Image (tube, rainbow, N blue to C red):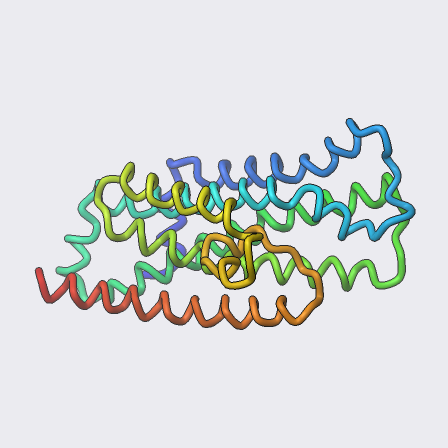
Length: 237
């Protein structure tokens, strides 16, 4: 089984269009805010920092909802078509199914973030001026945001893999996202909650490095947890 098969499975679900549309919607947030606010100049501030500080909570929330929706839908397809049961009769590792879905959501997350970074370029070009080091700063933020989304991707898929009923997994994931919006700024340790990473912005402090390290550790831990779940599921079956 490979990642290409995952694309074939979602062909009729509209998931691709959902991520593109959601990414475009999130991308319009900073532009609309600049259009509607009285002070439209970014000339006297750090443009990217100002845009992200003002808008990333809402953008990150949309990103999180897209990811958890995608995660729930991907495993709902498997349960509805008895894919997990069929997989046990084939010489294919169930872990490959999980990680192929991870790669699929990572791909869609890259598209989503790419659209949002394009919006940043448009906003700065329209209301400010490009400055020395702008491209490097933009790419650093792009990479940071992508890494910060990965714990959400992994945990959302793990939760989705546990429940045959899509509404249960969706409810748990949505509750976790709303919890994250309430605690992500409370203190540093609460900001390491997997779903809270999506709301963090790059400030180039020591805490950013700690968050990057924590995100990588969580990704590794979640990978082992899923492998353990698969082993237990096979043993029970």
